[in-house]
Length: 499
Image (tube, rainbow, N blue to C red):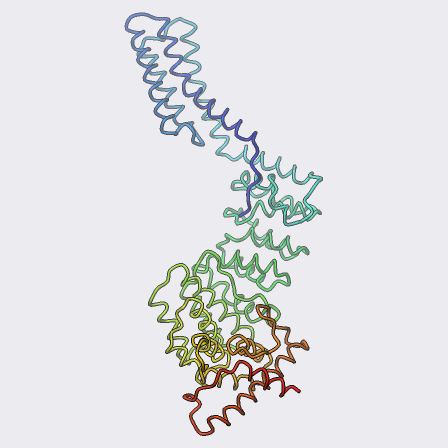
């Protein structure tokens, strides 16, 4: 999860030495047999010479196939040394000669030493000792980055993570350190850890609850991301409502990557987090790297019908999910399903609005849907999107779409300033009427003086359009009557109305 430490020129040198040492160890039996062939004559010399050449051929084959450069050569070394010992016996090399005894000693002791070293490594003793040394180095470190978040990227943290193996005790011991830098570094070394001994995960979870620093709590939650115990996952889901957004983001990432197995466990906590009005600004839940499973989609679809923050954030989350699907694996069946939800009144209004924006972004909002959306029985936000699309499609025409202008005029009368500002933006962009908005800039805050002025201008524009409609087409159907596009009359009429 974290970027590794910067590469250093000196790091390649020990790796090269290690490779040459491995190759030298594998060549030792061949050299011993060839040297032994020089000390005997006749049949024994031939056997030892053939044995030495055979050993060299095997080592060359291993080197060519790059098996020598693997992490462990214990089995290959043992096999080569024992085969060399067999060649020595076949060559009648066992006799009262110091070189023969020396060769037997080497061919027997090296495999035994390698076996012992491998057993020690497999026991974890060496790895545990290295982890304790690295943990002690972190605990005694004097200089730390100014930003607490940078403590996660220290080279010592990466080295500690690689050395922990199946025992997290060296890192857990650092959680009692009074300095938050040390605790963050220790938890970063445990990030997304898979193996926990009995009681260790509970210790980290308890520590996360008690920590005062948000970054420390976030690091503790990230360390528990691979838990598969239902009780612990349910407790960890409580951090989705943590006061710190950084902790909530870490909990979101740690929990939601595995919705296939965990959704039923954390479903109540997810619903509570989505429905918390204090967290409404967090927007949709982020399912980075995955797509929602049908069970989660079904729940979110039901929640999108709820009022308040729950319905809004559930709709936003579903829209983000569908947007990812359209981006990664566009499917005609999926597009057809989304259009059916948008057109049908059964879907929640918040979800229909998000789907309309999503389909428009991907160029899938066809004319029949837009015509349906502009109807007065739809939510105002949906009508506003349809009006924007219709006016954009015939912006070069002499007469703007009458249904779109009528929808904007009706929306302008609604007692909703946020809706009024959005409608004013459409009127200014599509009908070239001056609403007092800065082009290309975000809409003004709802309670600002500029927002109030824009709202008054929009209402004056709506009134002017009403008078123009009554004067030009007093009896015709609004759906069919054209609306003249007079770029100047809108501004002049608006100015006189404001005066």
